[in-house]
Length: 272
Image (cartoon, rainbow, N blue to C red; front, side, top):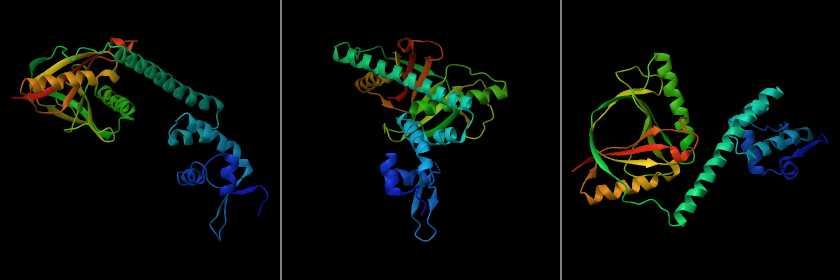
């Protein structure tokens, strides 16, 4: 056996990665053993693999997805590697801004400045609406990323068709209860007429009818207060829900710098 080879247990110690993690990375094609014994099937790693193992450990500490780490490792051009890291740097900076905003919200609530639950709720009749949408299941942790990707698909498709939205984008939340581990949602843009879909993009007509509505002003992580106000109003006035909740993004992050300036209309179809 070569002197520069480590058993998986030895490599675990020297690389500061668990055996379970090394096996997982092997299965995913991220860090393959340098040698596998043909008779025993034992996995061995070489000392030359330590720099790569160190790099993977650092990239994972930044919470980079495995596929992005594989892309980074395959890329040998220093400038392209730098571009990949800069993209993740922007994501992390946005996340820090979001965390700071959440801290501000906590301070507001714990300081007795919670919004009045008697915020204005109104009813309105809405006509049916042509829309293009992408429906998918996600988790609360991945909600923002998946919404962003879906909107990119929708607006790219509209551009290819030479069409424009007929109003602000919105999302639909399906299901009778909220499950953070399995959110059934639909990302949508309103359109003026029937349009062809593409791949997971589908056209349909969103039903109209009687709606209960309230306006949420501020960051998205505070939107639960608007939902709570609507829930209380619906119960107190003897209505029942008649369809999925809608979040209409009247003023979205692309339009303002401060998330305090965001404006989101929350709508529930209701029935007596």
